[in-house]
Image 1 (cartoon, each protein chain N blue to C red):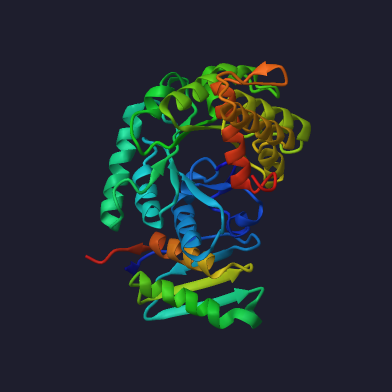
Image 2: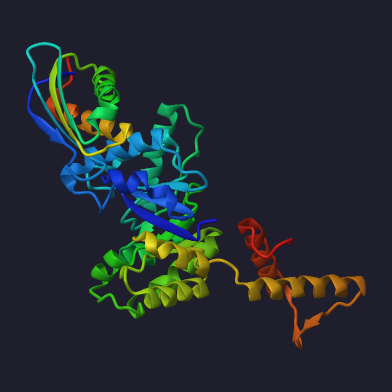
Amino acid sequence: MNIVSQAVAGTLESNDVLVQVGPSPGGIQLEVDSIVLNQFEDQIRQAVLDTARELGVQSARIALNDRGALECTIKARVETALRRAGEVSP
Amino acid sequence: MRRSLLFIPGNSPGMLQNAGIHQADALILDLEDAVAPAQKDAARALVRRALQALSYPGVEMIVRINPLGSGFTQADITAMVPLRPALLMPTKVSGPGDIQQVVAMVAQAEADSGLEQGSIGLLPLLETALGIENAYAIASCDPRVKAIFLGAEDLSADLQAHRTRGGEEIRYARGRVVVAARAAGIEAYDTPFTDVDDEEGLLQDAALARALGFSGKAAISPRHIEAINAAFSPSPEEISYAREVMAAIAEGQEQGRGAVSLRGKMIDKPIVDRARRVLDQARALGLGGDL
């Protein structure tokens, strides 16, 4: 999937995460801000990268503002933002 | 057994992750009214990921899907069927034709997911005047229909009636839904009581629903679950009386008596059937000690 536009998913409510996605010149550019960054940064980054790989996204700028979301919530919000910003390759 | 069915908004991560702790017999994960049209995709992804990752031990999972004509039904079914929820709840069901359309989509999704045909049951939500009038046709049109559910808020709007605390405006609909379900050999579930802070009103509403023959009742607040579970569980007095009935029947049979009476009243088949149901339910709930 190619990321061709800007898109947002999720919220800043507790247990949720706001995900902003846009095109990137190359690779996955990931920014993470989280209330649990010190404890879970690696796991959060891994969840985002796993989801991008699952959707076949190789290039995207992805920014997260995490309010303590579970891994399944992070994956769901990243998936939604990527699908909203993407177009399926022919 | 579904005494209580708790609605959980499908796009609320906090409520989804805590949904299993409220002692509800079933959760209804809502992709319909609780989700804004622009967030349907987000809710679908969230519910799917939550059902894959989280465990809700002892709680039955039901997913409320968007109605035919909304443009979301097919996507909801395609996303939810592989997760094997116990039931899907089609909304604004007005006749058996609606069920047949949903059944065709569910059957295709089952085939695509490698599931056995008929794995996913349906719990149609009857919330239109036409749906209530067609209740028996809906309840009996397909073996996937395991129960029917009365939705009073949309129904009242369709009837141009005002919702009241006592529910006089849905008296006919409640009776109709219960009769249709029982005639079709399936269960019926009652609409939620929507005033979260009116505990006395909830108790009266749940007691009325049980007295009418509903098997359980929905809730929009976790605070209502305990009262609903109590209302739809056999009371100690009911269990005690049911035991007396079964003992009297056993004694009568031992003595070769055709007619048996208890507390001055004849015990006939409906009374015995009811006693059996009470004891079966008590046993399933672990109530009443050694039954």
